[in-house]
Image 1 (cartoon, rainbow, N blue to C red):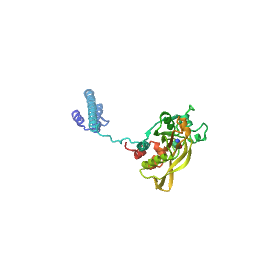
Image 2: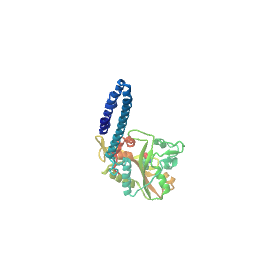
Image 3: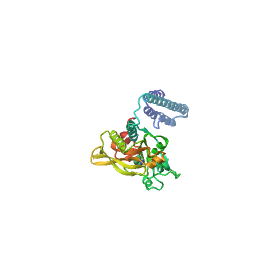
Image 4: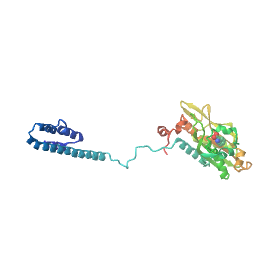
Length: 334
Ligand code: PHE
């Protein structure tokens, strides 16, 4: 029995087969167990010999099973390690990151304005009352302040900038004319629906020089929209009011619906895409410029809105939901 079972154990090809052999020999109804049960019918002299012999057999077989089991498990692990090795030099299967549509659109805008001689200026997201309102000709208590749905910081002094126009002030204070800048960045208003998110993006524009007039403003903006939408775009300027420009206007682009999509440039409808105007003399003065010497124009446009229009996105809130399916659908290969 010993020789045969030991031979079976060493021939077992896997852990399951080994277990079958163990049960057949050492299980409750196994060969060795039955032999041990036979001890009861033996004479005391036979027992004295057979008892220790069977116990030894049982112990030896158990030890052999355990040893074989360890060998089989090690062999299985080696095989797994050999077949599952990783080739660290293989290219990973994951897609590369993509540019967020807002970043892409800001880069497109910067490239278009750069061709027209504009450089990029920046300002802080956390602004003070002077730059966000007062220097922009919103006197304290002026009702136009209420229209901005401002987020105030707890210190009661600072605000999350409600527009990129404070960068106009910072630029005019720090830089001598001629000035030709755009200021892309984040802006904040307490507002949320399909076309408004509490954090959104604007691109501000500012030109200050001698003899600047509204014709320059119209020319720059008309050239911009045609370059941005990559087609001839019909625009209209509608009189409007901003405290920091006079006269002020909003610019609309012609569009039509094409099923769910929106086609820019043609059609019967007008969509507002930006505010603009000639820099108010009070703003020039607040920045130490003489309105009799220098004039200028400014504009501010919603980047997220322009991205939606250009790439046909239905809901502005999707932009900032961080859904990777949306991001990889609309993202741009950097
Ligand atoms: N700051 C204005 C807004 O956020 C836009 C604007 C900028 C208008 C510059 C005129 C000139 O609504």
